[in-house]
Image 1: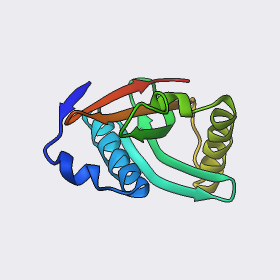
Image 2: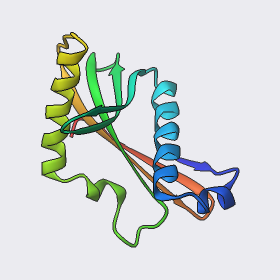
Image 3: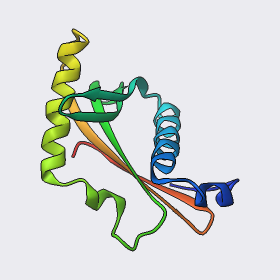
Image 4: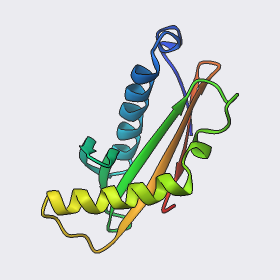
Length: 130
C-alpha cells in the first residue's frame, strides 16, 4: 500500500525514536482501517517491548504487531530487521502480555508492518502470521 505523505520535510527531521513513534501511529491507523482492535501500544516487559497488540476478527487471533519504519533502504528492507530471534522474543512477550492481562486467546499470531518513507510516499507492507 502506498500513501502520499503530507509533511515529508517534517518527517525528514524526525529522530529515530520520533520516526518509530510516527510509524507505529501509521501502522495502528492502518490496522484499525482493517477492523483490527488495538488492545495495547508500546507494552513494556523486562524481556522487551511489543509495539502493538491487536485483535484481528478475520483470523479470530490475538496479534503482536512489530512495526519497522525506515527512511532509507540502504540498510535493507524493514522486514529484514525482524530476525528469527526477534520473532521468538515476540512470541514470548505476547504470552507474557496474555498472562499479565489475564486474557486467553484461541490463536496467537505475529505480524510485521514494514514501513518505508521515500520520495514523499509511505509504503506499507503487511506480513501476516510470520
